Image 1 (spheres, rainbow, N blue to C red):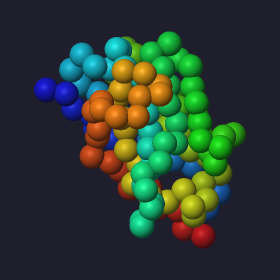
Image 2 (image 1 turned 90 degrees about the vertical axis):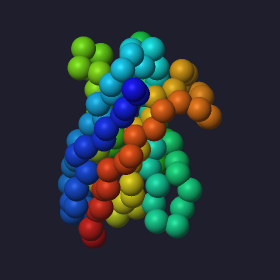
Image 3 (image 1 turned 90 degrees about the horizontal axis):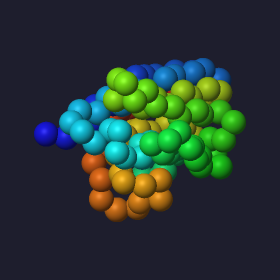
Image 4 (image 1 turned 180 degrees about the vertical axis):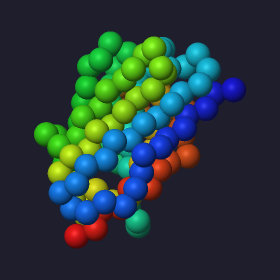
Length: 119
């Protein structure tokens, strides 16, 4: 059974840092690009960062220079290091595994982890 489990969400002050983790089970991790999305209250879910199986990365303009996505293929885990956090970074952060970096439908989703940034 495929399972993605996020962790690391917390309440943090503006300017602080958090590191999110997403552990994948099954055989999906090494065959899929890994994505981080977030959804703020009252807003649509948006793509934050993505990393291919080979390590190529992509970021939303709003997080470039502040967030870093990485993956540990030996541990089937993807990370999102978030620095210089701002209140607008608040939301539920979701992990997704999909065949390509550009895949917009399908794949597998985690349940999400809450990130709250106070001003």
